[in-house]
Length: 575
Image (tube, rainbow, N blue to C red; front, side):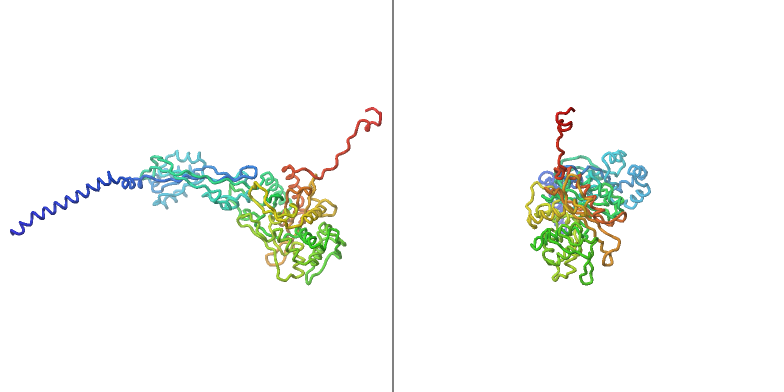
């Protein structure tokens, strides 16, 4: 008993010492947190009240070559809700639904199903005025968020080139997608104080400024784009066509001045958008170009030195057999020189030339002109077509290539090829962006041969019996070639009654400025030949385009001699 009593004071002292150490440790920690290491508590407090809100950055402006806006970003208000908070305001849900323009039962179901969540979108893309009217109702749990929405001033006219963005302002089609990194801005960051319910207490500071996207100037001339759009719409309606495309290229710079398609769509309202209307057919649809490639077969023949413009080919009796294949001409031409072969669009004549010079020169001329090659435009979904290169060419393959069958191209590739003819045989890369400097070209066709072929194409349009008379342009010399090709059927072979109509040409011939290609798919009313359907579109568009571009006429009639007063009344007579 004495031993236990003797140890008791020491136990008591040990307990007191331990308590004192604990009190000291707590006191030291308080001093440390409150005086020496304040950042810890400050950080913990900030974590519960300080928030960083993103500052949206608008996308870069897209313009045509003259600065006309094609795509602009406008501020919009997005309303979001906290379903947990909204549960306490059930009585006001019908009022909220009416303000949002939504069905009350649908909104009620959403809020009930997501009652445990703290964030849902109520509506996106309201104008600031519309959003403020909802916020003025002061319904607990309803908040706003700043965003930007893309608007396209040209609407359906430039839709296939410009493309569009999705609801999150990311590029999804066209140039919006191709140049997403260039156009997209970098969001900023703003520091704010919020209470535990997420309500804003104080806007503290801007931590990082938003950086807007960079502007993009396209090569498209909006004036010419409207013109092409209008004429394509008319030809589709007039001939009951399935679709149509037009491409216009500056022959010297390779800039695409117009690229239009029908059918098209309105990128500002895509609620009832049909997928077929979204296709940029000028770059995506491939087809056999038919007679529009015959000028390149003629250029290949001239390049061999075996032929000259006055070389005569016997095309009688208007057809020829190669194995089990029969090649026919639409009209009998008899003895035809090279110019007349283009004017009459003689399949027999061009086939005999190709079989004489062999497939290699024809293939090389078409390959160098860009057929079967990427245009380098970088447009999403662009097709390169197909230019076959057989290890051993059969006669039927050689002949069909010469008159435009057995290969596939896009309207843009065909326009690029004709721009080579218009640029004295020089090939310059195509561009959908405005260029400040003229690019260097590569000479792929002899300058004299190119000039000769252009004069042959002038005869196709301007001389009687040429087949391209409907493409004439008053006041200007133009050259071009029509084409009509049967469409490939889904089961193999060719369809009986489905055609594509083409016209491709260059203007003005004295100093070529533009190359234009028109493609009309499946005209079903009033005819289907390229010279009938597509050539008038070429003529109308080219005529107005040359005037808009201030190109001087080169085919005006000579001025009438001035008549003096004496000549009018006779010498010495009276007026």
